Image (cartoon, rainbow over all chains, first blue to last red; front, side, top):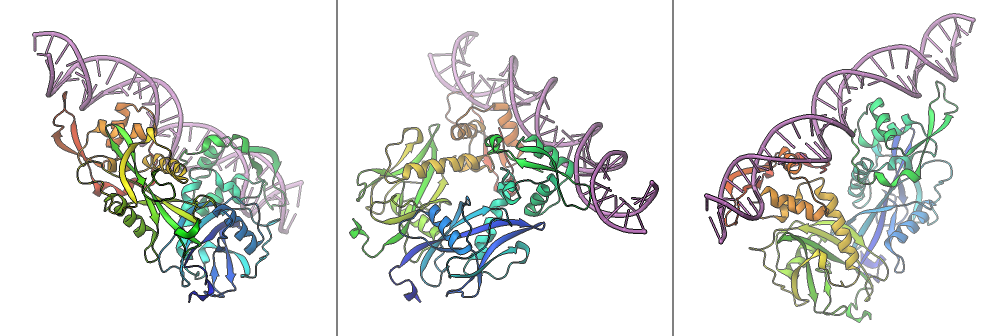
Length: 229
Length: 229
DNA sequence: AATATACCGTGTAGATATTACACTAAGTAA
DNA sequence: TTACTTAGTGTAATATCTACACGGTATATT
């Protein structure tokens, strides 16, 4: 089985858990593999690290090659290294996650032919995944659950201008529970990281809501504070 | 430079950041290296992962070989993979941390001759460290700072029977700030994970304090709750 | 123009948690 | 007996959290 990686008897790879939010649902980016092992299976975007690149650089490159996505800040969250996790040898995988805005400019065009296609899949409706990618995904999801309670990273999933109701939906979907509208707004606004744009939603069929933007300047101080709803 | 690892052009290692508490100070376990590179330098205990062991197993084995310590629960916290971090090739390192009781049964007897000696060093007084171990240590320390605010892992640093003042000292040393005695006790006891042993300290030259023990049964529910002092 | 629809946006009271703060009690040592 | 050192305790003011309901407003329909 090892002839595919003849020169290595141990190596390492990157796998990326990318979250997106669309139509009120949390999505994860999966590729359909075009190579053995697990050819034609769905998998997290990932590949081997090159000799001359750091893990962070590698994560950015691999994501770009498999999806066409660039300039995303990804964060390492765990390294998976069970002995049998990869059928072709001892390959450990450093896992990264990121949250990003869907639609518009972020097109999904695999540049490598290692992936047949890349798609955003509803996390409630995942197909069987290659390797130990289900485990990696599960841990990535746990990670962002914990993280949105501490830092307002939910913004990263929304368009630049968003309404408080949209923001609340993101929290509800990730945390998996309903939140109280008044308490949510009170708390969110109390952080002083939202800028009221004095502008209304367009194209909705009922009363339009106020649009807000995330105010990066006021951000830093929130780190490490627990947010509970 | 690569002849020391002739059969590998990339591989991975484990480094352990082990915390202990002694004489009112936070200590970290360091070894004095007995091999090139960085022979005679101080370093975190760490070594290469074997082909047939998982990362967790490897961490336990390496710790045992370098220090004689066994049966410690260690947790992975980050993987360091900059290109130039190891002079002998592309070696990434998966870092683990643990907190443990000093003294008594946990003797420090290196079993491998890769380490000349192992010592508990005050974290305020670290020597220059080999490789990128200063960075690994710094991140490990940050990790436990965040963690003792969420989970009462500070017990792991103390003897089985301890006083509330001792426990407060652990918090103060790790967090790097003084805490209010009454508030600390009130809060700590409110978690209901301390068992009053109806027993007093012995051998102290002033009024003896009540001893407590950590009650494992009552533990679980605390996970994920923010504790702030 | 009138009406129905659906989402927007707001306040308060009670409960709980956090903070700041200082003295007496108890044991040991001289 | 006295001096010393640490143990152990309560309260009031403030801040945060929770639960809870309705009128306002833009749009669509008739």
